[in-house]
Length: 139
Image (cartoon, rainbow, N blue to C red; front, side, top):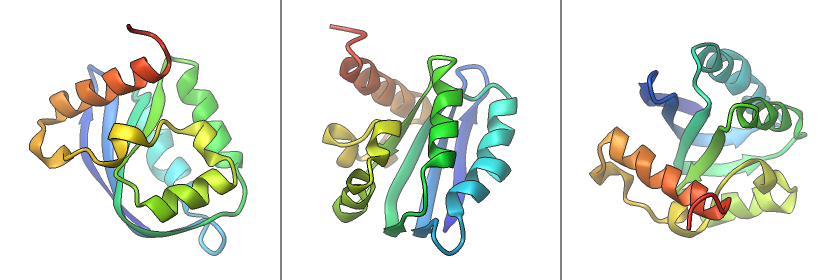
C-alpha cells in the first residue's frame, strides 16, 4: 500500500491521507507500518482527526485489529476520530466482516463525497459535521 499525506492542519489538528493499492495486513502488516511510521509522528504533533481517502484501495487483507484498536483508543482520548472516505464497497465489506468498522466513521455520505472539489478546510468541516451528526453531538 502507498499513502500520500495530502494536507495537515496543525492548528485544527487534522490530516488528510490518500491510500493507493492493496491494504495487506497479512503479508506486509500495512497497518503497523502506517501506525508506527506515519500516524505516531502526526499524533506527536497533536493531530487527532484523520480523513483517510481510499477510492484507490483495491483490496483489503486482514490480520488482527491490535493497531486499529490502539489508534482508535489514542485518538478518541482527545475527541478525535478516523473517517474513511470513498472506500470501495467490497473493501468496506471486508472491514465490516471482521468488525473493523467499529474503529472508523464510514459509509453514507462518506462513501460518495466528491472531495476534490473542496478546499482542505471545507472538506474537514464537512467530514466533522458528518461525524458529529452520527455521534449525536449536534442536532
